[in-house]
Length: 94
Image (cartoon, rainbow, N blue to C red; front, side, top):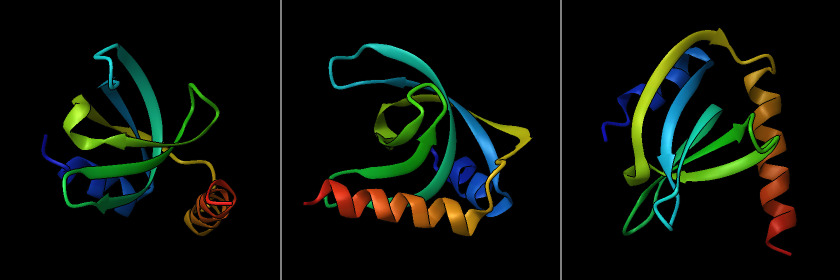
């Protein structure tokens, strides 16, 4: 999976529609607001607000089957979205 579309969505503050398979290979379709693209030793991760789950989620890039950059803008300023994601990460670590 080429993460170029994710980078473009973050840069242009636009939504993505993805087809994703979870750890049990259960497919789902998500509309996400990407916040950040991160890397671990094994995986590339997409941090995003998920409209389906109404919350922030992390998606492994290798589990994304399809990605479509939408013309729809993310309705929250990028700086606020990033702060909210960082605040949630801080709560999750406690």
